[in-house]
Length: 335
Image: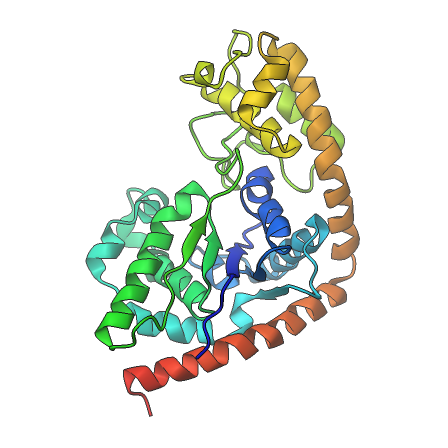
């Protein structure tokens, strides 16, 4: 079976309230990759249900993520956009890989510990086995590269370990490529606007902790104005951001939106107070995000179009995944 050369796979969970972290850490980077790679972009609805989802909201949120992909600039005619549950090979390969991966590997996954918290015994089996499904998502397309945020690097390492063990266990030398991470840009991990030590999250009880892809220009300006900072002026060097998580987060967001480095931002704004920097950041965020928000609203008003994009994408995804899962069945001895 011919090996792909530059095939990217990635996905976003449809759990509602897409925010700036999803855009800067994932979706925006997807847009650039379509110029250099064969891209497969998934709405990972099967991952979403590791925590209970209202079925009607899940359907709406799935369309919202697809709309965000398209509105941000991903071309569905040249890239594959689909939702995970439409391609059964994801689930079938996940089961086979469940039998390859080791419990000890999963016990080391810090994200499960964070999400399950003190009630680990009440967490779903799906939440625990989530990294194996993520490995299957990637490997069923024999993807070579995966754009990931810092919090997903551990999961990608597990996918690599699982691929290597499958290849070794079944004498299938190099059948699954070991996918490489693509960690891109100065804001790969966007933090909460209310607490610069915590990741920006859909589940944070404070709406002021995040900028969502539905926010109006006034909402964006208000949230940035109220964002956590400190009384000191912006430093003139990146080193000066150490120990100042709120400042570091806002500078990183500005850098990512403007296509600059943090050093370049500080060369422009170093020594100035946040009373000057925050309005500039708000103007930049509105300039970059409002056209995407407006296009998302237009697309969401035509769900039949989005559903058609997802169905066409699923047909193309199945054409890639089905031969891989058929070969996997042969390798493991299924008849």
